[in-house]
Length: 335
Image (cartoon, rainbow, N blue to C red; front, side):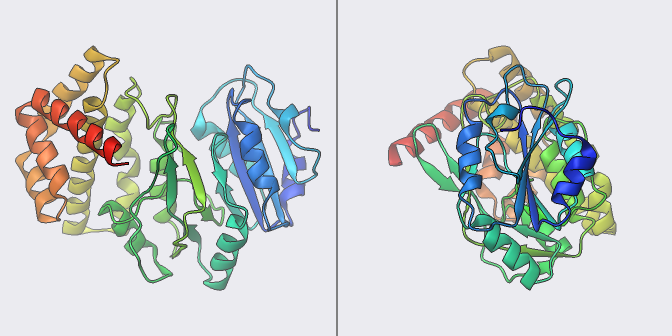
């Protein structure tokens, strides 16, 4: 049972000969972490290590680790956020591959075996897979993940992501390099973009082996003041996009990312019932930023629902919010 934090050098030495290290950022997650650790103990791949990084929790975290030399613990002196945990962990691990698993999520028993095998066989830098989202009610859904040839050049994979044909985030397998995370609530988005802009080849595993549990405390589950971080995240990925695209393609890509960002923000505001002032502020800001060209581009690229959502939010936020909630209720009944 690991009670004390290991040193960075000890972690480097312990992961050096491992095929893959699973990095688990943990903050006050004593209730959910055991479930995550159980899923890692059940892995069919034995040549892995698990690095649990306690982000200055008020709860005891490292004592929850099993008595298994593959499970390593590191504690930050105070809460620094997901981006800092990402960077500290990547500075320490020395395995061939890395994957991030949140402390309230799980992966299927064969996940590491299948991802590592595909990455090695296809000589890729990154392996992505679809996420299975699990609602508190138990309802499940799988994000967009179009059937594509694997592997693909990284810039083509990035384009599929931008077009909404693939949905993935920092929960992917990759060969660690110099890319690090930026301090932002949505740091996983900027990290993923920056990572893909520095690699050559991306593989695709179609089986949804990552279980992404949604709950009231999830960043993606409710409207919070940190939504304003999303308003600035495009600045964190602009250099990455410009390194992959140039000229008109770069301008069009940033334009598309802009309306996708606005669509996400108004969707979060529309579904909120707890923070009326914040909801109003988000709507007001987005209405000023939405352009007719955003609506046209969304419709032109066959994102009809998003295009109509942008148009309705721009002209009548009250009707937009009501329509969004009605759609959500119909979806829940259908499930």
